[in-house]
Image (cartoon, rainbow, N blue to C red):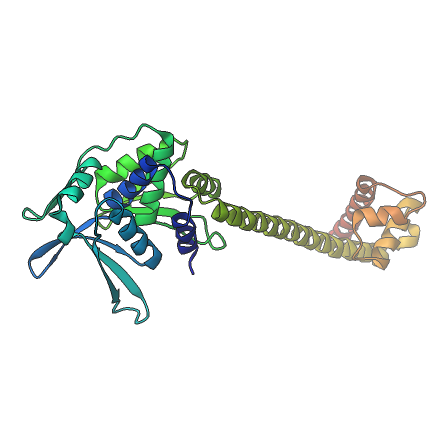
Length: 318
């Protein structure tokens, strides 16, 4: 089961809310998810979902307002034989007066003869109902990528007015949605992990929120460990390269003037570097008597490098 399906399962199992919130939620579902389609020159008002529990949830929600609900059809897609989509057809209940009144009360005016769905303004004043409306919109047209892969929340609207209306409700909860148009659809999305966590909190998906937070913590820990390992690997590479260079010019000194002829401090560090080529500057310093700091070891090695360079210049100058 996808992460989005898990969230939607959680949302439709939430305890019953006040009547005003239940109405706002179904308004969010229908205003964002209804579509007008033509089949054999006959216009139909439909709602399509891949989530079977959601199709049943919409049916029972509408049935709480009138005695019947929309027709539900399950269809296998041509691309995936085991993939089923559920189509809710509202045509048969559009002529029922009670449903017409309900449609009008949530700002929807459907005209099959003209083949139009007109959305009027839908005002919500209570914050609890705004949460319910946002939740309904996500149930209808929302998806969230598994946080193990990426942070991405997306809602795909067929109507720009509804998309902007939905964004306005989101912003009332300090959410930061972004908007673009893609292939004729209005896309509202968020790509920051914390923004998606805040969205889940607004719609009441607290179990999904906790699961996502756990995944975020694990990902952050992995990333931090990887950064540390990469940093240590890079530092190790620098240490090895520097050590090889130091061994090279100490051997050059050994072949020219001889290590024994160096001052005592330089002689000690030269011998230690030849004996322990893999040691860091700090480790070399601890081997000296008395111990010497990292900067002191580096200073002596630079002196050795300068002596080796001078001897090379003398050799090539002859």
